[in-house]
Length: 218
Image 1 (cartoon, helix red, strand yellow):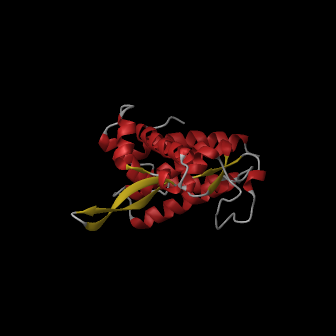
Image 2 (tube, one colour):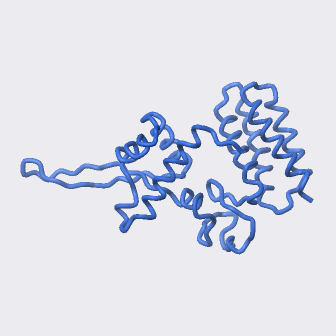
Image 3 (tube, rainbow, N blue to C red):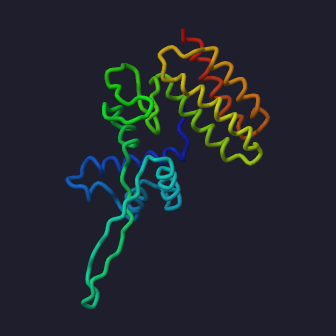
């Protein structure tokens, strides 16, 4: 699946924070201030607004954590403290690069050593997905974000759409997803949003990926 420009920037931010985390020799050196992030990424052609937007998105979606680093110093003989905001890659972000861990915590999969299961990967907030279905899962995630933000869809319809979307995603952890469930849920979901122009591109992509999966799943 082609990666969008926004996701390219997010990936660059996350990769920088992952490299910082892996090089760190102490807790305090695992994170970076915004000034350092901007300096490093402006060197490869990104603008401040793009970097800030990508970082905000990654924080909001749980890929990056915000930390306050307290500093103490004296001004005119008086002890003063200030907090510097720093950014550190989260467990979700780490697994994006290193793959699943036996220590992954999830209310659905807790107690299962997922490293023993061939073909499984972790996507987003501890979602277990078959590797070959990852593109579809991520496209559905993108569609969910677009549905939530679309003002032309009523809250009632948004809930129904997101429910059908999650039903499809729940099948993607299985080696052999239930074709009937996917077809029915996708039919209900796509019918509700098919007439909205801004969804045309993502719907086309999902239709293609879904057809491929249904054709090769037993």
